[in-house]
Amino acid sequence: MLELRRVSKRFVGVVATDEVTLEVKSGEVHALIGPNGAGKTTLISQISGTLPSDRGEIRFDGRDITHARPYERVKLGLARSYQITSIFKRFTVLDNLALAVQARSGSSFSFWRPVAAEGSLFDEARSVAGEIGLSQKLSSIAATLAHGEQRALEVGLALATRPKLVLLDEPLAGMGPEEAQRMIALIDRVRSRVTVLLVEHDMDAVFRLANRISVLVDGRLIASGAPEAIRADEQVRKAYLGDEVAA
Amino acid sequence: MKRSIAVFIVLLGFPLVMSAIDNLFYVSFASRVIIYAIAATSLNLVLGYGGMISFGHAAFVGAGAYSASICIAEGVTSAWLGWPAAIAASALAAWLIGAVSLRTRGVYFIMITLAFAQMAFYLVNSMKAYGGDEGLTLPQRAELGLGLDLGNEVVFYYVVLFFLAISLYGLHRVMQSRFGRVVVAIRENEARAEAIGLPVHRYQLACFVIAGAVAGLAGALLASHGKYVNPNVLHWVQSGTLMIMVILGGVGRLWGGAIGAFVLLGLEHVISDYPIPWLAAVAPNYPQHANLGVGLVMLAIVLFAPHGVAGLLSRRRGA
Image (tube, rainbow over all chains, first blue to last red; front, side, top):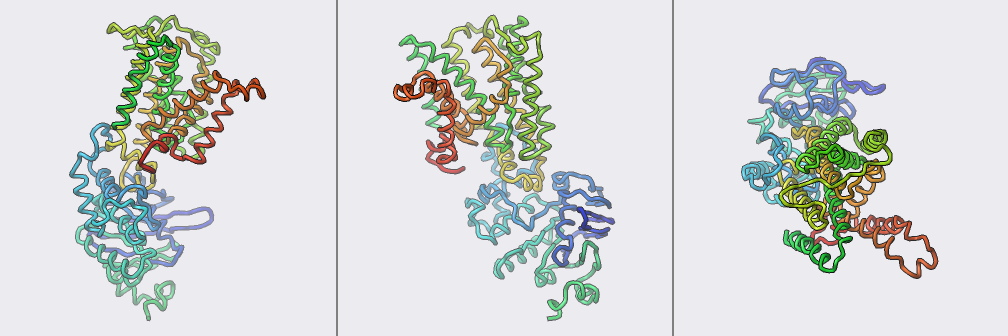
C-alpha cells in the first residue's frame, strides 16, 4: 500500500533519513521504532509531504506521491497525526472533527450556506467522537481537554478524513497508563479498516499491536520483520531494544 | 442580530434628523465614515478572520478608486459600469498580489504586501494622464439612474449605507459557511488544516481576493464621495489607518471594522474641530496633531481591551 524506495533527507550537516526502503502492506499495523533522533518523525513528515525528500521515491496505492502536496496525499487517503498535539485549540471537539469531515467531503468553496445546516457533517463527526471516546465532550473547547483527550482528538482528526492509511506519530506520548490502554484499544479497533504506520516508544504497545516492525537507527533501516524476529535480532537488541525486552 | 438591526435603524434615521436641523455636513461626514467602515470590514476578513496581516490593503481601495475615477473622467459616468469595473480591477490586483505574497509568512508577508502597495502608489503617481501626483478631480459623482441622484448627500448616504449592510451581512453569512470555517481554521492552525486535506493556499487566496474586491467597491464610493482621487489613497499610511481601525474596533469581530472607522474618524474630527479650551491655552496647535490623541486611545485599547471596542460592547468574550 505504501512503498518507500531509498528515501533520504539531509539537513545541514546531518543525515536524517538515509536511503530508507520500506513497505507497509494493506491491513497491517506496521510499527516504526528506533532511538530518539533516529529520524522517525522526519520519515513520517516525508511520507505525509510536509518535508520534501532529497532523494528516493514514495508510492502510495500504486501512485507516485513523491512530489505531491500534503493535502493531495490526504485526499488520496494518507492521513497523519502529530507527536506534538496539533488540533484546533479554540474550536470545540465537534467543530474540530466536523472540519476534518468537511475537508474530506467535497469542496469548501461554498460561501453562503451555513455549515450548521449540513447535518451529515456533524453526524459523522459525532460518530468519530464516539469512536475516540469523546462523546461526552462534544461541546468542550479543545484546549480545555485533558492531555489524553487531546491526544485522542489528535488521532480523531486523522481518522475523520477516512484514510486508507494513517501515520500515527507517537500517539501514546505523555500518556498515563490508563490513557495509554485506551489509545491502544482505539488503534486495535480501527485496524480492521485502516492500515497503520505506528511510530511509538512504548514497546508494550508496539508488541501488542504490530504485525510487522521496522527499526530505524541513525536514519537507516537496520531491520524489518515480524515482531518475534525483531525481538530476536541481535543487531536490534544491541542498537536499541537492550534490556527493555530482555526484562 | 437584534443589536445590529437596532444600529441600522439609528443609521437610517440619522440623515432625516440632520436634514431637519439643516446640517448636511454631518451626513456627508457620515458617508465617509461608512465608506471607511466598508474598507475596514474587508480588511478584517483578511486580517481578523483569516489571520493574514496584510499591510497593503490601501492598494485595493486605491485600485477601485482610480478605476472608478478613470471611468468618470473618460465619460463613463454610470455607476453600473464604473463600480463593477472598480471591483474587478481590485479583485484582479488582489489575485496577483495575493498569489505571490501568500507564499510567504509572518513578517515577510507584512513586508511584501507593503511593498506591492507602495509600488502601486508610485505607479499612480506616475500616471500623468490621470493627474499624476496632483490627483484627479471629477466633474461629478457616478450616476446610478433609477431616479436616485448621488449628487444629493442624503441619497448618497443611503447608497453607501446599503453597501455597508450588504458587506456586514455577507461577512456574517460567509463566516458561517464552509469557506468561512476553513478560513478561520487556517488562521488557528495552518499546518493541521493542510494535514486534514485542505489546500491552504487556495483558500487564503480566495479570501484575499474577496476582501480586495470589497475594498475596491469602497474605493469607488470614496472617489465619488469626494469627487476627487489622489495617490495618497494608496499610500502606506492609508493601509496603516485601515489596520488601526480594525484593531480599535475588534480584530475578527463582525462589527470590528465599522466600529473602528467610526471611532477613529470620529476622534480625529472631534479633536481637530472641537479644541478643549484649557488644553488649547497651553498648546494652541494641538488640534493639528489629532493623531496624538488617537494614539493614546489606541494604546488604551491594546492594553485594556485586546478585543477592541466591539469586544468591550459584547457580552460574549473571546470567540
